[in-house]
Length: 563
Image 1 (spheres, rainbow, N blue to C red):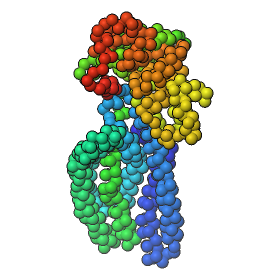
Image 2: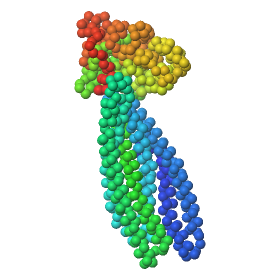
Image 3: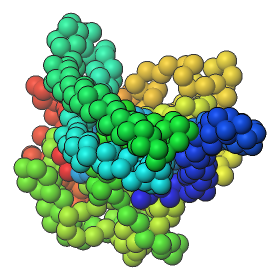
Image 4: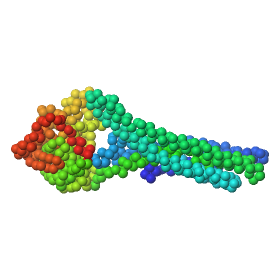
């Protein structure tokens, strides 16, 4: 129904044009019959002139349909893609985890096109139904025996088509699902191409990406087999039904009940009446649209991040987590966390790998909602804020920031409405990336794609984006892990000088924890302590957090994929 509403005016126009074409097509055999009978009787050329005019009208209708149908489809597809992408971007982390990036891209690009074609397909089906029904009425008006001859094969044709549509949809749905899995693995491989090359596992990854090809082949083969069976049965049944009508018309002509012109019209109407049953490609396309719509609905029916309509009252930026619990597949990631972050203060969040640090940051900035408890900013629950108010309130910087297409100035100012160039430069200077950008050929106007950055440079650019945000809360999720000690010190001083901003720094660095006002020490999803670093340093377990171990530290983004 939503598909029909998208581009409703164009849909109505398309349906109107096709219904007019159907009416003209139904009138054509009657005019042809009249023209033949006129010539045989030597009565003039009136019907012939009318038939010529009708042919011109039908040609105009065909041209109009060819112009409107693509526009109609593109309008519907655009609306579907906008709605799908809007919902996909608002999926909760838990909902997002069920769909690979490549799978979502496939649904956005392919399944929306298939689903968007349903209105023109429905229009074709509806007009075919009108033509078939009108042709049966016309046969009855010529002679009722012609209709009876046609109806004998009608139930069999209906059963064949109904069985085809019912059986083909699961095969097409499976085919699209397998395509989505292959796309998802391909995106994974392209994202980690350097690791794969370094490990020398290219052939293994190729096999993994394409491991579902046999299933894809079977699903495609089974669907084409069904379509082949439909075509075979239709090719046997339809001619028999048409021959039955024409043969009956011949006997009726011999009896003198109809004219030669009406015999020609009966042959034409018999073909029209069979039009709905003979369109195997139409039913295949309808089944594909149905399968595509079901895959879109899987995403659209998945829980999205809802928002309220409140704004912040303009307080100091005090953040409160009250009895916050976040569940993962194997237990709680956060377990009854209570935490009060005074406005304008800096807190460091530390803990062993998997202790819940990134999850706490995600809850504090409402990347995710807790399963229990609530998070308040200046007394307002984050879930009650409008999307605009939440985006304006919380700035972010991540361990591995991502950049959209654009210049470096646009990358730093991304998400900050009305930001001025001097503010962009100021944020870049604080993040120690201004000199790098100014050294590029076009400075801040250099496209990001034209100047690849190292890991540390990417982090500093992402940090500049967070610093440029200017909201009351700034969350850095291990955003300084790849910078050297001297650069880290300079950046830390700049962050400490951000008066009026509440700063939450997820870190595993002792230097950052030491400069924070207080440290939130997480242990197995719970706050073990919340105190200044100097006070916690007396505890042996706390000191061990900062001692290098035999294993590399794993990014806690893995936590969020399990939420």
